Amino acid sequence: MSNIFISVVIPAYNEAGRIERTLASVRAYFSDRPLSHEIIVVDDGSTDNTADIVRNAIRNTPELRLIENGSNRGKGFAVRSGMQNARGRYRLFMDADNSVDILHLDKFLPWMDQGYDIAIGSIQIAHSRVTEHAGWHRRILGRAAKILIGIVASPGIEDTQRGFKLFSAAAAEVVFALQTIERWGFDIEILTIAWLYGFHIKELPVAWDNPTGSKVTLRSYIQTLRELLHIMWNRSTGKYTSRFKEDAIVSAAEFPDAPKMFHP
Image (cartoon, rainbow, N blue to C red; front, side):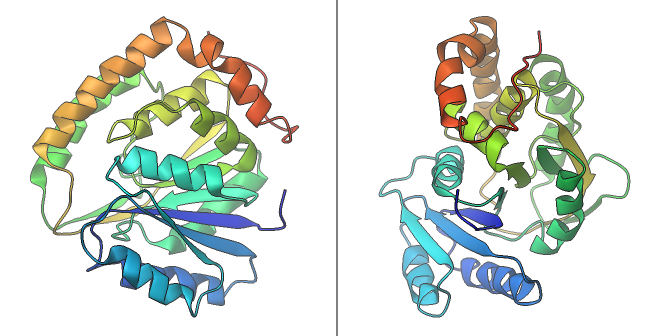
């Protein structure tokens, strides 16, 4: 492993209007903290100048890297690409619109020291805060889907969908090797895999600023429910714990702290 303490992965699709501010926020965060780090922006086939903005930023930010997918594959694909290219002891993915500020990392990292493998942001638990600018359907449909997701995919998790999730290297190596969903339902899938593999997950309250211009639409929720059926099928047929099991364990072989137990 490298000596990088934390990797920050930012998936981006047509984020020319916001990516520069988000990168400035991340750089400012690390300028005040002596943490070895890397920042990875994964451009998911943007048709605007998102990639150009990141390339310009690299000139003054040596710890910044750009991965270009070439075509639009989906947020899940972009996150997986970034997490599998990350080299940090801890690996965070966050949204390009900075809806959950990087400052939350201060409250997430201590839980990793206490033995948790994954820490996830939530707006469904006490002390969370939501600033809603648009997309009322996201809240309504999110509540409606919560119970179903909890029953069939991620038991005990109140909020699967926040774009602010921190993984240990061991957890990331296992979970993202098994991820199959490339679009909106990927959050549910990676948490389902993590639960099946016995990783310890901590859900933490965050302040979520839902900006205007969100790419999450009603159609996104319909697609996510379809992907939930895909997750249910993978679980019922044992794909996460049989067909792909050896691949995941081989990927995580260099991380001796990775759990070896599976939930029934």
